Picture 1 (cartoon, rainbow, N blue to C red):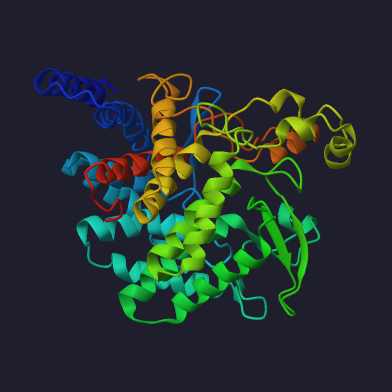
Picture 2: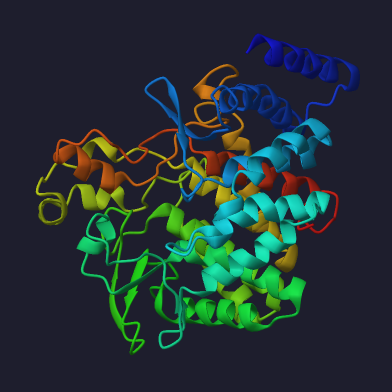
Length: 433
């Protein structure tokens, strides 16, 4: 570690003394350079290049290339190249991108948009590397196999494998709000190729999400289960929130981000209106977001955790969720902040930038931002993957947890994206390049 970290810290110190720049963006870049030195070294420590996902029990946890979070570390490195201009980060990003080559043929889940667009997509945008465009096109073809024409949606999870938990929920064709994030890949590939097929699929999915995923107050359900033969909605529920009618924080984040992206590529008023409705719902009601703008992992966790009947129904234990009522989710804040900067650009609604700035300010200090040399090299603490899955595993005596109150690589990724966008809008520039 000392061969990488010490020179970087020295450079950071010289940068501060020579330029005197101490704004929040530059300070966070310096912090990220110091922290990521640990992760880069750890990723190269074994016989093969590894993908850091989280840090817990004193160890960095790595994931295989087909894990849904596998593209975020490469994307983080591409953003570091964009933020610093240093070729070192582009070189590292390219290595971490190209180990994902086979994802373009993956068809058994929907998260390929995250995996490939954040890695190959950013690499193509920033370096125009030959072959990266082909990977994006092939990935879109693979994702298109999950489109269910009768329902007009892209199926999120398969339900036929008894070894997977999704097969035990009674679902037929589940769609999660997260799936809105994969539409960016479809829109971009249509733009690149002139093939309108992918754009039509993306808009069909967005329109069905508009129609079926939202409550009257513009909060979103996590899961909508369709009949893929008739298009009928069978059930609205959750997988990662505390209860079916609760408001899972990251679901609200994917929601506002996804519809802002849909507007970017289509200019359709219904998409920007939905993004505004979601943003206003999140930001104007003081009961939704804490003062520091870093949300609880589920907006309704306190209410439902104290509902004995609900807890017994879900977890066979009235006190199952009581230890988890105060846990925040930094990943949700990072995603929302990034989306708000783009939404601000289209609407010029000052509230959106004001709240995004507050999120960046809060994330730039304790207790959320990790001190240099800690946290395994991840930038932030206090994110949540799937807390209900973890509770059920604990009850069943299984040791695997689903990332409770830990760093997550996508929290880092979206924070750096938000920094880039913040810097651009403050110069009067379009945050999307």
